Image 1 (cartoon, rainbow, N blue to C red):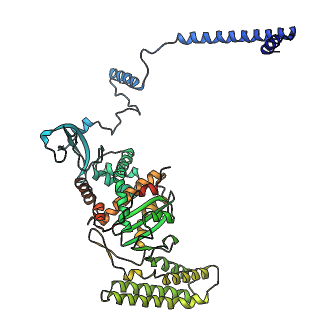
Image 2: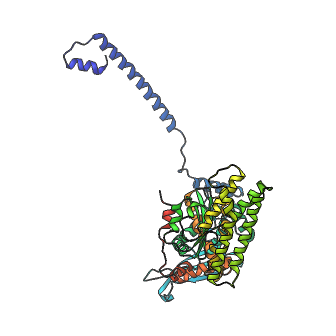
Image 3: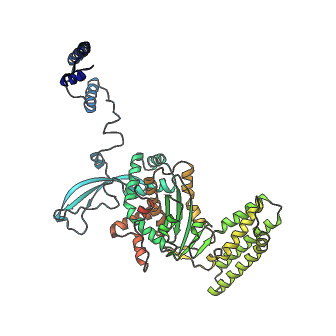
Length: 504
């Protein structure tokens, strides 16, 4: 019996076993003796620890570094630098930057007199001038009544690099496909400026955040285009999709390769332009399409290489080449009127039908293996595309004019979008693609904006796109918004990034 059972028996008036009572008392006595011994041992340890030497001041990394610096000064040596030191090499304080500035410029609030403003602060900014990295000190003034600050031209937020510097870095990372390590080396080699990978990452984040509001405008321009080339390929995260028109060049990274993704930007019910693509089912719902002849010709060439002695394969290949060359000549021949060109296009459709119709009848309803099956499938694909008016649409479609005045021709192949996917495919194969959705989103915004500027500037150079960005800040309106405002009853898309990259 334990103590609780003995108490319960006494309260109920039951007899208590004297032997059990003695056993309980003995057990409690042993437990108490063990507890007294434990308390004595702990008390002894506490007394020993209390006799140890204490520091004169609380220990910290900074106190340790000051002690090291003091000891080194006494010995005439240079103190060692801690990895956690706030004065790392390359991390210059504003005072040292201001001392290295080549000039000082005043930045006043727009439209406000200087005598009503006071100097707020001076900010050093790295700029690229004549391909050299220089520091310019900007005196930012603030209006006393309205608290309006002057805006430094070509500087995003509170960044320490000019927009031309950030664009140069973004072009090297995303367009040229260079790693951040190589960009660091190139900047140090050409501009004699040592920057870190973390600074490059911060620049790209600043640029993407600054351009995020323009992405809906770019998608709206694509939705109002006359000609649009579309293609997709696998990527590190889902897929990468290229949608290139005469007004915008959108490259989506890390999105799903399905109809809902395409419909987010191009709704088949409202898009009235020409969609130039391969024969994937996702493009089958548009009213005006042009299928890629290069894909069909490559299939015919492959069949001939696998069975070079089969004459009917060679006949099909040569016939397709002849018809495609004739279609290209018809497209470029300015002697035809619209009706005459349309009639000549119908003659090409009849010529293609005459080439494939006898073979289609011979293989109708049959199924084979190997090369013969590939041949039968190609015949069926040609027959279907010819019946859907999807092979010669480019012949009667007028060329589109880009905002910079150049022409985007309606072509019979989809090489435009295939070339734009080479860099993302190389980044995927060399493990330099984004591994996260935020990284894919950042890449989408920056690449789409920079690539779309090709349609607006006459010469795609760092100087031209920098001047374009500076004009946005001065005018308060981007070239994309101005172009969209010119379109009567334009389709305007909103919230595209939220639909493509939903927040979990």
